[in-house]
Image (cartoon, rainbow, N blue to C red; front, side):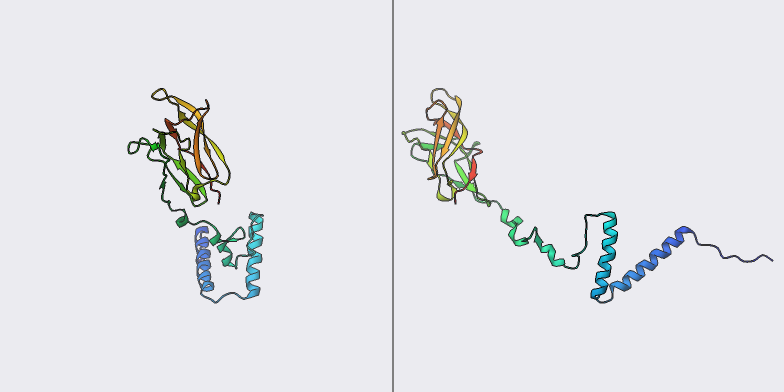
Length: 204
């Protein structure tokens, strides 16, 4: 008479059974109350051993203090700029001195304008020209848009004579807000002056 032998479970069945036991045990542990101090320390030690073995530079020593997540690099999260703080700011149209005017308004460059961003950087733009008078200063920037010191920026000038005779020039922005364009040849570049791309840190 043949004896009845118990059939051994396949490796897949063994793995599935272990997974089921772990899942049930994990659920039971999760429903219990918080771990006591010694138990927490034991869990941290075990986790540290496993993590150190795989990634020596990592540690879970402070895993219990979830409030550490609200501080970054030693500073509170409120010290950092949020997305709402970076909302677009209104652009201010700049008043030009008598004899000066914005050109190309409505067809491209737009009027002389500027704004100060949330980090205190002033940005200028626009295309201007002098049509009358002898005022060498094109405009005076309002207080919040003025630098702490006199600044000089490279610019594209259009000297008088031809319809368009571009020359390298300089835009001098003084600490009192006065803006004066100067051509490298020494004359005023007043027929066409681009303010696009000029930016600097505000003085206050």
